[in-house]
Amino acid sequence: MDKRITALTGQVLSQIYYSTLLDDKQRILDSDTPITAILTAESLGIHSVAMLHKMQIAQFIEGRSQSDISNLTNIASEFGVNTNNFLNAFSIFNGDKTTQHIVQARHMLELVGGNGFPTLAFEHSDGAYTKLDHSSYYGQPELWLAYIKHLTKKIN
Image 1 (cartoon, rainbow, N blue to C red):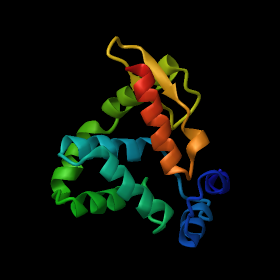
Image 2 (image 1 turned 180 degrees about the vertical axis):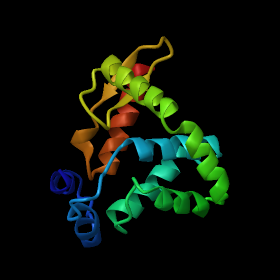
Image 3 (image 1 turned 90 degrees about the horizontal axis):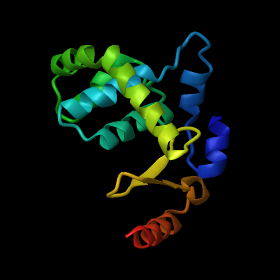
Image 4 (image 1 turned 90 degrees about the vertical axis):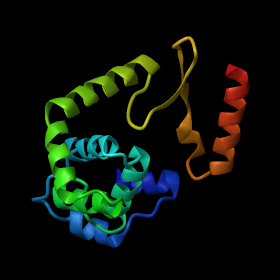
């Protein structure tokens, strides 16, 4: 899948990512831990997209797992968050709150007609949604912005 992502987007993943994370057959890569970290970060005043960005750099460039709490704690500390504060908040979001978030995300995915992650959509003032065709614009940010501007004019 990673090679497909690189082919579609042009995003290069580092050799250390492949050798450290993917070649380690004992390593478990899960989604719950990074989702919990993003929810935790947001609760502590860190912008969720900024946290995700640093987490992706850590994993795909530096070869540090997004499923490792010590890596996530180090990333949060780069935003000035105290380690104990992060770990305490993480324990609050771990489990039920993360599960609830995942259930809501899957509901939203179904609502907008998505079939996987990422799925992007505009929400209209009347509560309706328009699903965005982002995959046609991978590696083409200028065309993506033009597409968004066109849709915004069309919707408004």
